[in-house]
Structure formats: structure tokens, C-alpha cells
Image 1 (spheres, rainbow, N blue to C red):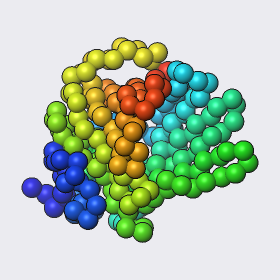
Image 2 (cartoon, rainbow, N blue to C red):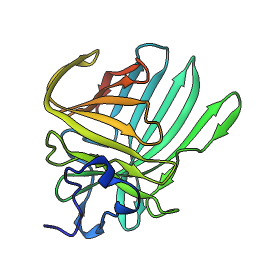
Image 3 (cartoon, helix red, strand yellow):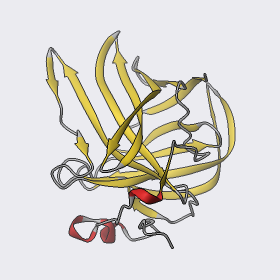
Length: 224
């Protein structure tokens, strides 16, 4: 075992609050993010559309990096637009350990609403008690439950692996051998999502399964 605490399957309750304290060792992180279910090659652009509205989302893997507590993270720029207006502008930070797990290290997000802005939901590993979580495991198994992020009262998303051989069709194409997750949070217990991550692409669909009916599909991927 490495010194990195790999988040194995656990009950959601066991992942929460003061019991959650992953031991993160920068010596066991690698350059870049190459997990086939969540690859982040700089210059790649993912275009998504929320099918029930005119909201679009453009996700760009930047060439810049950000060092967080000794770990060099890939920076991903995420812009959501509705009716030609920016609704949210976010920079997410990811890093991969030597077991292939992709860790979510934080985000700097700005929401725009009627001329007002909000930084609610922003967090960074090591600031105000915030801790990283795993967005994609190196070897996911059905039944795995894990924290995706943690800052008490602000960022408490969790995930559960439902399938490692799912099939899904979106405007960008048809995919097999995908990881399907159930995403949920104690902050909004009435809302859940399923997400589909497919080989050599990453996330291709996010669909609300509880508390709504929206689904966001991948329209296209542009690679450098």
C-alpha cells in the first residue's frame, strides 16, 4: 500500500464529517491526469447541452497548472451559458495519484444572476478545513461509495459506482464499457444524479434521477 489513503468502498455515513481524513502524500501523485475514464489532456474541449433548456456548458482542459499543498493539479475551465449569458464560470483542480485515482482538489466558481455574483460553493484543499475527494477511481468496483469533495456545509458531494459496463448514446456518439455513478449530497438529500464516464472520453452524460428530470449530454469533443 502507498501512503495515499485510497478511498475504498464505504458506507456513506462512514465517509462523513470528522471521520473523513484522507492522508494525502504529494510523493504519490503523478504528472497530468490520464485515467481512461477521466482523461484531461490539455487543449481538449468538451461541449455539453442540457436537453430540457437552452443551457450549454463548455469545458476546456487548460495548459496551466495549480499547485495545492505540494501537488500539481490540472486546471479545467467550465463555463455554463443560458440565453447567451454566462450563468457560471468555474476553474476546477484535479490531480491523479500513482494508483490511477483522480482527486478533486477544489474549485473557484462564480455564479452570475441578474448582475449579482456569488462565490458560494468555492473551496480549496487545505483552506478552512476543506479536503479533497475522488472523482474517478483507478479501479472502480460496483458498490464503491466515496467522497468526491469535502468542506462542511459547502461541498459534500459523494458518489456510488452503479456499473462498470454501462452503455449510453448521446449526440457525441454511442459508448460501451462506461462507469455509471450515483451522485448525491447530504446538503440536498432530495436531489440525485447518475453520471456516465466512458473510455478515453470521460463524462458523457449527467442525468437527474431524483428531484428533477434534466439531463446534460456531450455534444462533441475537440482534441488538440
